[in-house]
Length: 212
Image 1 (cartoon, one colour):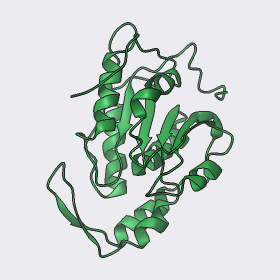
Image 2 (cartoon, rainbow, N blue to C red; image 1 turned 180 degrees about the vertical axis):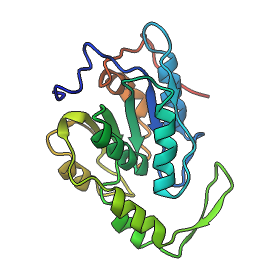
Image 3 (cartoon, rainbow, N blue to C red; image 1 turned 90 degrees about the horizontal axis):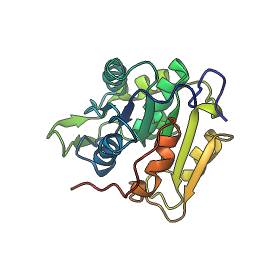
Image 4 (cartoon, rainbow, N blue to C red; image 1 turned 180 degrees about the horizontal axis):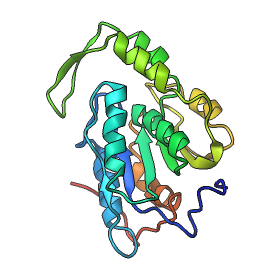
């Protein structure tokens, strides 16, 4: 059940913000599926923002906040992995409904082990190195607590990147869907699009959503 401040029955989502994971981008399968799902809701297409996020988490959150301004008063937040962490930061700050898919729970600890490591983003071609700024920003952004009523948690039980038990514990008490054998990329996302949109009080038109 959602908290009194989030009434999805009388105030359905005015739009959807999707945030991709670390070193991912707008061409990812989940990003494309979410945009397609927003076009397939009952009634008018639902505004959807799925921005390319900078690799620095504080900058990524600023981009996400700017995107929210185009989505009306009651957007639904959806995020995967590191995007799930950023979505949780926004959900706690703004009291908005959120769907988190294999979310990173303590990304500051994870990133601390990557300091000095070089990455290339296949979507943007950007080369970057993880430094102490990433760790410090994530430490500062981490919410002190999570409000279970805000969230729908989607977890793959065979996540090869993150320990799904950490998210299961951190989001205890929230609505949860476990996908047996699901990987970190959550390749079965299309099957759960109706549940995701329903968390924002929206319904999809009949038919399976696919992307090219």
